[in-house]
Image (cartoon, rainbow, N blue to C red):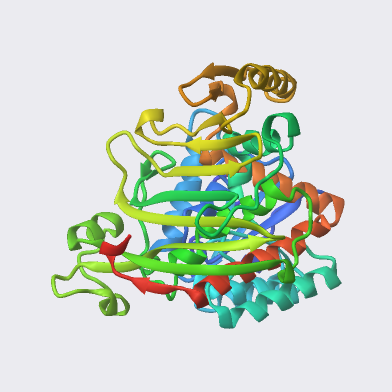
Length: 461
């Protein structure tokens, strides 16, 4: 057994309880990683985290998924610039979850993998007295929602923290959109909107094949099975519902009786066999994917979804689209519009913006543009105290808020930020009340949207 930073146990029959490491710091939080199968698991450890002990206990079934995870952590340890010092102490075996719960080598478990197992993992960890930091989504099937509800209640009773990783709150354009929406002289009052013209809309486009942490991402085959990964309408949409709560009703608890799903639909993305092979490295489809194949052996995945819902009377729309690969120079993209009585705040990330998230402010018809520009300039001057380097640039329809590169940390860096926020909550001993309430309501909405949705074919997007 090796205990030096960067080393890891490699024996299937040797459990973490058999290790003795005198370098462990009892004053720091000890991380457990359970069954890592999604790249978000290793992005949590991409950067050093001062609050965490460098010893991390990993419990997983033997196989490619845990090996991919460990390989990426080792790359973080070995890099020249700002290397990490994680010591991965690994147990591989079919009883991996039972071993983790029995050995209790850490006080926070990180969950990012097969979503069909996640709700049970969450409940069992909380029942065993272990805090949980989970990748989204926490639940993918309506029948599992009561288990998540019980886990949240039990966590509060036990004084444990159950939290999901909402990285999009740390994207600078979203932060500024939220900040400006709170400035009445610039934004006015949030419009309630209608089902066809919501007060706030958020749409994101994602890709099955892309680069992560400098390398092509290898997807597990189960990622394309909606019974294991979850349909698109319950997956990435979690982020978008969260942002609507977070921006429109900051630090306010949203209860289930204050929301309603109006309509919802899903549709599929077709992957060619060679695209599936490129994304997974597999030459054949596993048996569980055969039900999604068409006559030409294309894989049809219900990865896309959209729905309209109300929150305290405000109409919101979320939409998620998955394509195989981004256009040349492109990446995952985000579009958002908040409609105010004085102006609209719009985030665009298209080819015209060089696929860089960009924030635009467009005054409503009838608003005096000269006076409005003075109000906007004053708002940006105030924001520069917190976010230095912001500049206003005129456009045909209004103004763009030019954002310096120093404020653009990127999606992968947001994992460190959200983890640090969670660790701060741990040190304080509790989550804000609105966070717990809104986690439960957020997943209530995605489950209701799933139940209300109908699946249409790819030609009806």
